[in-house]
Image (tube, rainbow, N blue to C red; front, side, top):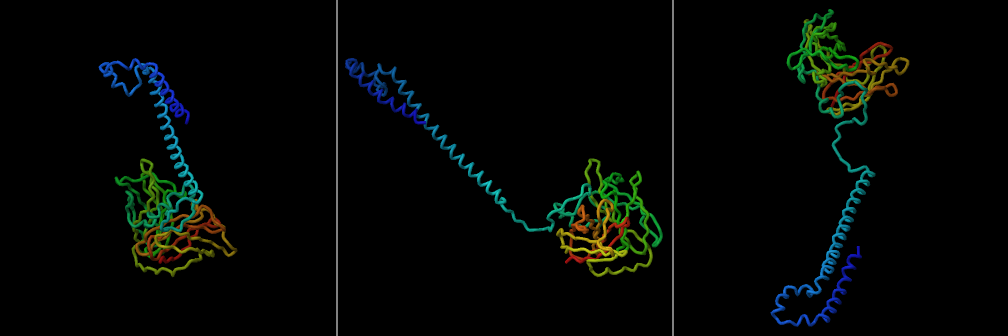
Length: 366
């Protein structure tokens, strides 16, 4: 980068010597009278007329010298920019090695690591926690779908049949449903005092009418929950739980809820759980089933190693949660979000040796 500047500097002495020689040789030509010198006044900034052919050499040298300055500035600028880029990249790399910038947020869930079994449908936690914290089954209409019973009155203690349709926003019977846990429709029936729990699976006719044999063993008002995932014409899937009241006329004597307990017995099996639910927070409940001979071997029932339904005392808000895909040391983990403080009744369906049983618990959420 120094050669152009050296060349331009060397041109100055050469030009000066040339002018000196020329002045000593051509001195007689510069004696003419004043009138003849007047035209040459503008040219005094440049060499004598005889020197003008040599002027381009001097002029051309200057641009060469000036051109070296931008090149040096460009190099310096490039070095500065390159240094900044390198510093940024080094800072980013160090940040990644140190775990990157930390973002703190208020914890709102005990959920840490959880995987779903393929095809199990929507779950009540993670990114959907806010929605999960809202109990379902409180009305006959939700998300554009309406539960329409075609029979709602039963004789207590006698076999009957429940028939109903699910209709869309245009009042058309819905006939397309996703299969979730081996069934397109799960029907839960329970009396309003949270006794008489039943988990049924209706069948659908071509016109969208569902039917299932149903017996209400005691008089009173019963609640039926239709838990399904509807398929819209554009392929969208909507998981919905709708509720409707059924009646069995007669003397209704509600039973008080049993005291809260973390264990229950059914048909010789002892079922217990560990975990402390919190309102609005997703927490694990770990259930274990023991037989008189030790830990029972759970079998898949409707594609899972257990089904858990929680109903809230009072308005009978409905929660339906599913377990981890596989038991761990014979225990099954459910992730549960209870919407509000209060008392809940838990119903755990499990299968051992081909027989499905239901263990019931009373849970108090502070």
